[in-house]
View (cartoon, one colour):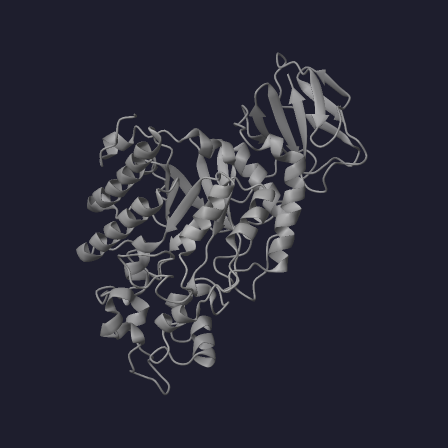
Amino acid sequence: MAAKFEATFDSLYGYECPAWFNDVKFGIWSHWGPQSVPMCGDWYAKNMYIEGSDQYKYHVRHYGHPSKFGYKDICKLWKAEKFDPDALMDLYYKAGARYFVAQATHHDNFFNYDSKVNRMNSVNVGPGKDICSMWKAASDKYGMPFGLTEHLAASFSWWQTNKGCDKSGPYAGVPYDGNDLEYRDFYHDNYEHTTGNAPWLTQNQKFMEYWTRSINEMIDKFKPDLLYSDSELPFGGEFYGVGLEAVARLYNTSIEKYGENRAVYTQKNRDPKIYKVGVLDIEKSQLPGIQEKPWQTDTCIGNWFYDARQTYKKPGHIIEMLVDIVSKNGTMLLNILQKPDGSIDEWAVYILEEIAKWNKVASEGIYGTRPFRVFGEGDSRVLIEGFKENEVQWNSSDYRFTAKDNNLYAFMMRVPENRVAVIKSLKEQEKVKSVSILGGDKLPFEQSFGVLTVKLPEKLPTEYTNCLKITF
């Protein structure tokens, strides 16, 4: 059995990312909970208490004023009556997902499993179902590593809005229901925070103790293969020790289960002194080049939590993002939006089915690959700017590379109109033995002074990103 970790930076710097995470490349995430009930977008539990915001106006006109009908009452409306994790997991696996992640709790402090720490959970309130356990059972059927996300660490200051009141109108001065003493454990005793989301991570000692009990429960109950914090390592600065205790517990639980650590912890601080205890996560953005260590992008087909007004990314855009991320030693975790009843809409089904078609053709160039010497060639680049995922206007000189065994996989981000692919990144000593197109046949090629030219077929295997398999 592997030696266990201590809850110190020095000990946890010995962490090595398990091979499974560097092989799977693509996972699906259920970012789902009571905030999906209004079908009105992300951060509903916070913004419904911000006078004048879109979600406040929707709430007042649809449910009533938050002094009378608050977030606790929204939670009671969540029923998940059409939630079928087995059917969804079948779709997800066919689309190419090889790990699955469920949301254990968002900033709203509602737990999606049978918790002994928090009475406001999906078994006691709303669905009457242990959502996370149901997800785990479904993912186990496919042998998929199972992860959890916790957004709880940022909850304390994030949710200070529920302690307010309207400043104008018929309810001016009437306290919101976050002031209800009966629900103080749910809404937090967070009067000390009055400045929006600052600080993202509180230094309130009592709350840090509550977070620790909650995370320990998640780890002990589910023994997750992945744990994600929607923050940097809690709780920052002089309180890093709180987070280190949780990370050590996660890894040591995995060692007890497998004899070695197979668990992954992800957080969002880009300082290598912090992220070396696990894996760096980048939310709705990417990194500019090949990274020495595996990393993860978490993203979504639209935005977080179901919103009846939102538009979705096109399947081709998602596939191009995946290819670009994998070429840089990354993995993509994609949220598929669920309606409050637990189902997904026909547009989400369409996206999954289109990705599944592409996956049948091109997955050899994704799973189990590692970066090539360079991540690609061509001048086009993804926009590296926080929370922006604009489609790239690729051209026929743009390629993204992956490698496995004795093969280079060259993804053509745009197929040349003349059906001649030209790749300039090979060295003269890298002699090409054969070239084929994934999902198709071997192709004629020429190699001169390292430059490889390949004659492409008129009919291509996929309408999305096609890939050349180059064997040395």
